[in-house]
Length: 139
Image (tube, rainbow, N blue to C red):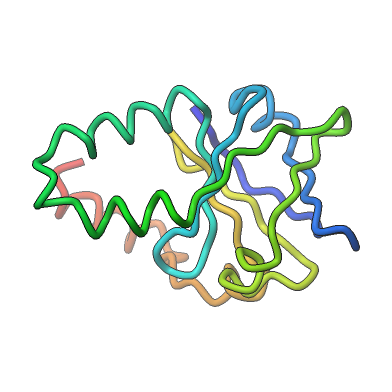
């Protein structure tokens, strides 16, 4: 289970350090995608394959555009010996990442946010607000 919040920065060569707690769980091959909301998401090989299997279980006509978008905006990367992954400039631009980054564990995947965008999120800083939202979903 990918959990936690980690602050770090992109280096001059567009490399991002994957926090060691997340790197160990993500494994040697990581898929990075442009995700909704202006962030990037990272999946382990196992979780990415499960995600793709679910998509491929739908009829081609239902998911054609989703598949085109998803696969054309995904890359496979391997962390180097220092736990860094190279992120293409196009993806950094999409996510608004210039320097400071927040990596957020989200259970089966992790999100990569420009620190400024992350700080703008309204996550219901009051536990009562989050409890109400969870109750609405039956959690």
